[in-house]
Every structure is written in C-alpha cells, then in structure tokens.
Figure 1 (tube, rainbow, N blue to C red):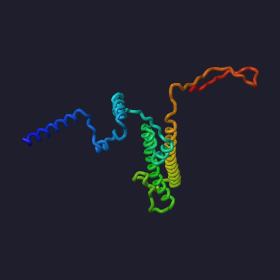
Figure 2: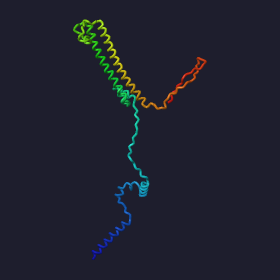
Figure 3: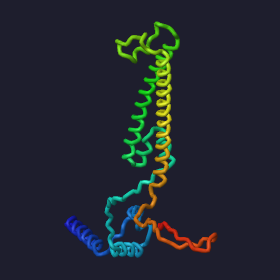
Figure 4: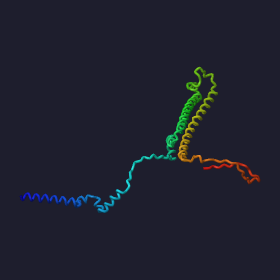
Length: 235
C-alpha cells in the first residue's frame, strides 16, 4: 500500500512539472546562448527590430544579364608601323584593311618575278659579252642567242659586241629599278599602315563640305576691283 501511494505521488509531481514547463517560457541554456550569434550581438529588443526590418524591406532579385557591347577598334599607329616593317601587309591586317593586302602582296610578287627575270637575262648577256671580248674560240655562249643554223663567220663581231653590251646595261637597269620599286612598296606599306591607323577615327561625316562662291575683291595695285572666287571648308 505504501508503495502504491509513493508511485502516485511521483507521477503527480512529474505531471505538475510538465504543466509548469509548458506555461512558463523556455529559457535557452547557457551553451545555446553562447552559440547563438544574434543573442551575443544584440539584446532581445534589437533582434526583434532587425527581424522586423528584414521582413519589411523589399526583396531585391538579382539576375545575371549578358549585355552585348559594341567595342570600337582603336589601332595603335606605332604598332601598325612595326608590324608592317616586320612583314609587308601585316600592318594592313592589323588595321583591318583586308582589301589592301592583295595589293601589297601582288605588287611584291610582280616585282619579285620581274627582278628574277631581268637578273637572269643580265647574267646571260654578261656571260655572252665576256665571251665575245676574250677572243677565246672555245667560249661561244653568245651563239646561243641565234638559231643553230647561224654561221659565226657571217656575223659582224663589232655590231654583236655593241648589241650585247647595250642589252647587258638594259637588263641591269631594269633589275635595279625593280629592286628600288620593291623598297618603295615596302616604305609605302609602312606609311599607309601608320596613316590609316592614325586617321581611323577621322570625321568623314556628310557635315564636311566646301562652298565656292564668286566674290569682288579689292586690288591695292589697281583702282578697279577684281572679280574672283572664294571657297570655304565647313566642318
């Protein structure tokens, strides 16, 4: 009987403690408060204010938007010159003037072929002129310019010597002119690359115009006025 009364009292005590815990606010433990950053940083009223402000603030949504921007190409004149000096036509490619590349390459190919051809002809006529001047009957390279049926005794040696000398000088002059033209194309390509890069943003809008109008001008050397034209550039 005593055991039954003791067990009933213990049960009533447990139920009462549970009811008291449910009615009263639960206090966090010291360890939980130590681990809570909000409780450490601010008191309960401050926490409530922060939560209210956060809930009342408008929600900002961020989106990753890819915007295509047009980048204006601005070539460097110094770099364009150096690239053109490194290889003819490379400066025009750097300036994005691709239509000029065939002109530069075509000029170099044509002048290179002309230089090679004139140099070959110069070597042939130089050897022939040297053979006809040495009076050695075994050296007859000048006869290669005539058909095989031509008799050497029928040729005028004086006329042939003058002809070989003039042809030799002619092809030497043409070869030298081709080399000079190649150097000129090289320099022109460099200048064109520099000017094209420097004037890449030059204003060529329709606002540029030139006005020409008749005008009466006073001449200090004559009592009568003179008639002429006045022109002006508008930009």
